[in-house]
Structure formats: C-alpha cells, structure tokens
Length: 77
Image (cartoon, rainbow, N blue to C red; front, side):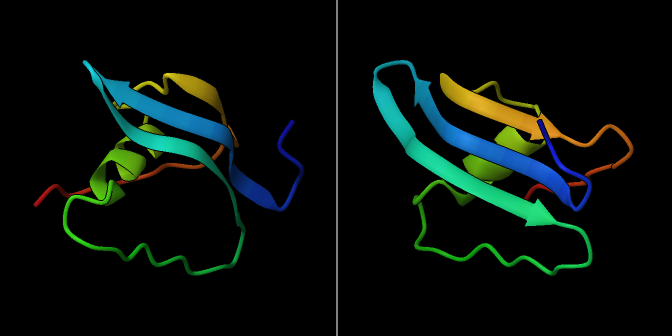
C-alpha cells in the first residue's frame, strides 16, 4: 500500500518485450515534494520505465502502486 507521502511505488518491476528483457528488478519510491531526474545511456530503458509509470506499458513482473489523486504526464521524443 502506498503511504501518504509516496506518490508512486515500484516494487521489483521488470519488463520483457517479446524475447528481450528490457528492465529487471526495479524498485523505487517517488515521494511528494521531491524532484526526480532519470538519466542513463541511450537504450538503457529510461523511456520504458516512464511508460511503465504511466501505465502505457504493463510490467511483466512486480507491482506498481500509484496514489489515486495524482496525474502523470509524458511527452515522447
């Protein structure tokens, strides 16, 4: 369950697309009043992780909990 200051909670999330494992065992919490930056090499899975957070992709494993009162936005490249 997401506690009051946690807006988004990922627990052991993984993503497999067709035959390739894109993300594996990702766990993180995004709390209220915090700024989060996502950086990494090209092809490292940043956009896939964002799409999981937005529910435009579904995780192959793990759990994603989102506080009901938040709205997330994403502008693709």
